Image (cartoon, rainbow, N blue to C red; front, side):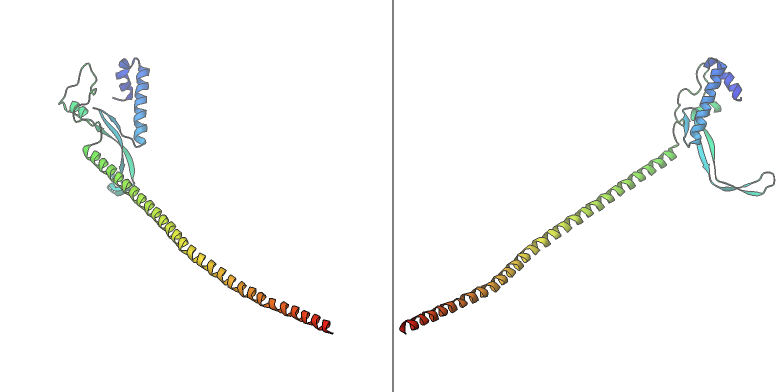
Length: 213
């Protein structure tokens, strides 16, 4: 059956050949675009379409038998669902007046195989554990940095407190020295005062001598 025959087969159900052609084109286009983008298209009971990466390898040319290196490539792959397999193998009969793969039979490929699901779960758990460890490490570093800053502030404050009494002592000492320097000057001025008294005595003596004459 080719595409034209497929369209003819569903034309009656779709209400016309053009509607059937548009429906087939839309479905195929959606599947192709999704697979090219790397998504997995899964139709319950029917099968799944996915993109598979093939690594670089060596192959044999069927005509010459020569060994040829094949580059890395990606290919589409279709994996039939369990319901489709059961119908093809004959273990289940095709319904006459109903859709063949309407319901999902037990064990159908509605999702990735168990091994792939387990591997994906382990990878996700590992990523979560790594992210949590990274967050804890960052939190520890932040706490340590904050502790260092607090310690530095305390040390600076303590040093400032210690330096304040010393500064006060230095100021007091300098004030005492200044007062000591000023004190002798006052004493010297006081000592000079008697000289004026002696001058006054000499003047009085002169006056007495003049009266005697």
